[in-house]
Image (cartoon, rainbow, N blue to C red; front, top):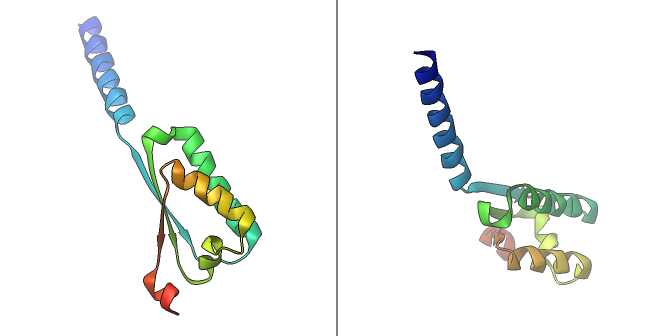
Length: 102
């Protein structure tokens, strides 16, 4: 009886682990602060998340609005290189239309 119960528990545990491994992690980062140091920290967090879960196991969106719009401006050459690399790796950058119009 104990062996059967243990076998059932192990099968259920294996199924749960397999199911969890098949799901993608979906993460949204909100960027509404200004300052290069803060933007570097946010991009570091995105990179760390992708390294931890793997690019194929994560869907990441950075929503940029308000003071955070500076992250994507052309005069941030150093940051734009990192942004482009993340975008090529599948990270989606979404910008608030109201912020663009302001």
